[in-house]
Image 1 (tube, one colour):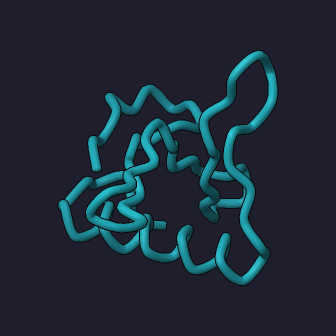
Image 2 (tube, one colour):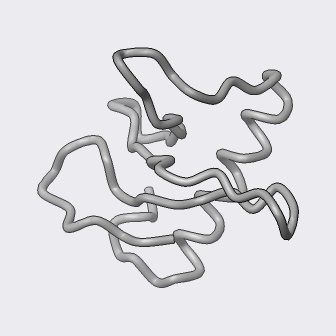
Amino acid sequence: MTPIYYDGGQNIARFSIDVSPELKLTGFRLRRRRDGGHTIAAPAAFGVRVAHFALDTFRALTADAVAEFGRLGAPHARN
């Protein structure tokens, strides 16, 4: 996970998802929501998201991304 210089915007980190040793999905962003929560955004090509997840998977990936971001010690990861 790569923390982004935080200028008060929504994007706070970029990260990849290792699906298997042979498959890595890159270009994901961890975003801070206006309500103080977090969400992830998949990369887009030509205005279309290139990855979609079931809601439970999406929530788990978001929780994992937030935990990793906090583990890295980024001061703006905490609410």
